[in-house]
Amino acid sequence: MISTGHTSSTTELVIEKEAPRLRLDQFLARELPRFSRSRIQELIRKDFVTVNGSPARPRDLVRAGDRIILNEPPLEKIDIEPQAIPLDVIYDDDDLVVINKPAGLVMHPGAGQRDQTLVNALLHRYPTLSGIGGKERPGIVHRLDKETSGCLVVAKNDEAHRGLSAQFAERNMEKIYLAIIAGKLRRIAGTIKEEIGRHPVDRQRMSVRSGRGREAKTEYRVVISSNEMTLVECRLHSGRTHQIRVHLQHIGHPVMGDKVYGGRFAKAFPRQMLHAWKLAFEHPRTGERKNFEAPLPEDFQKALKSLPALTFSAPRA
Image 1 (cartoon, rainbow, N blue to C red):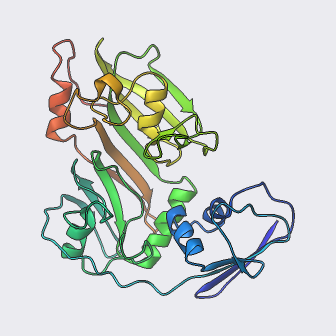
Image 2 (image 1 turned 90 degrees about the horizontal axis):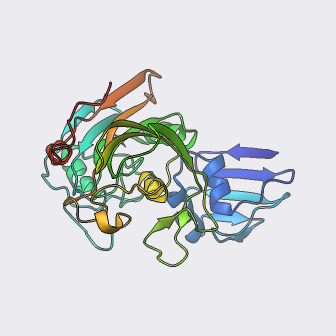
């Protein structure tokens, strides 16, 4: 049992009865879906979260009787340079924008890249974006890997950001991907339920054998196949880092062109053949169910046609 209190900038949670042994960052991400887990971790590290009056660490376990206070800081000023990078806009209104992200475009500035990112492009076209994600990630509700193409929703204001983040946390968002994978599956459909966490040795990779993973579920369905490769439709029921890539590699059919998990298939194509095909959610202001689809990019279609044993036909709608 958890009691809560909330003002414009302070949230208080009191754990009244014994709760599952969760890390502080996991617990707060579950109870406060308006924040992403990375944002929660940042707030904890910067001492905006206290447990029983004292600063805490993201990995600290919560216990019955704990009084947790989160003081939400003022939104940070966005100081990223807007850049005139072309965007393929699928949908646009006062609250959000849905982008068809091209492969090769990095989501936001980081240690290795300060410009030529999606955020630079967004700020050029939309000078005011939600600041909840922090100054490096304005408007970013969810992410796609650099080499993944397809549907991505961006929040223009804080209300939309909180509403969309809550739908992600509550798994009310429908996310369907298309992936070209190595080999031919024995089953035409199935479900992969394996926890995913940071690889115990290589911290740049994720793994189903981390020992401290989080629940992850991916449904897949074969669309078309040859002996060499298969086009599968993947439906996500969770949003773990690299989830589709890790799950498909785990069952012995990595994404073609995946330089991290692809093994001997890493160089099959210039980039990983993964496309965020469909995205559906309730509009955070109107409640209307919105459905979006990103057409297959040219390199993806070309990859499907590259093997003569495969006859390409579009996946079902």
